[in-house]
Length: 219
Ligand code: SF4
Ligand code: FES
Image 1 (spheres, rainbow, N blue to C red):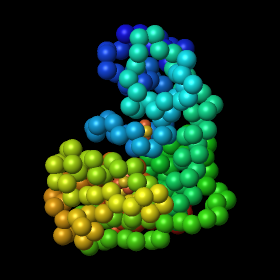
Image 2: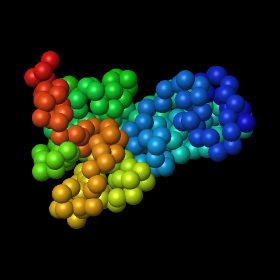
Image 3: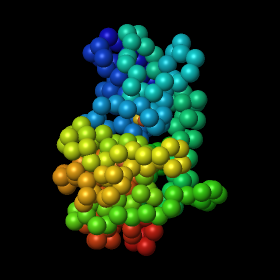
């Protein structure tokens, strides 16, 4: 099949998603809930693109290519959706995400800044630091679901659960009893995929990297 991404023709296999075709064409589409190691989820709506003939943007990570499809990754309506989603998740964090995180990098490329800070509620600080290797800072969670899917799909440990809705949405380990009381096997897949460092390796905190970056103290 042949599809066109921002004017460049790409040959793709049936079943290829728009996101995969765009990556084949070296074209960047922002993503937050996507991880190529995991089954597409289609939750964040940051990867929206315009498709010729479609009345509304579509999510690139879950939409399969059609022969002759003409995709516009710079479609203004799609970019408005992506920008609004990133603005919203940033506005709910008590601190800006560390510069090395995927969220910070997506925000920078979309030119979304959280300065000055938006007014409104931010997630209360809640940190679990009782695991020997993993730290869980719930206030940085944007509920992308990647850690839950990584735990289920990569490790088969089923230690994490998505809970709550809207602003209250978050993730818990076990029955909210923490990593140590859950079926966690300390594989680190959750920390590896987390786009905000809500779940991270403890040593990052112990070495001060993450907090120094978040607070600007290390700048
Ligand atoms: S802890 Fe991280 S990976 Fe898990 S849902 Fe929250 S932001 Fe996503
Ligand atoms: S990356 Fe496509 S919906 Fe989240």
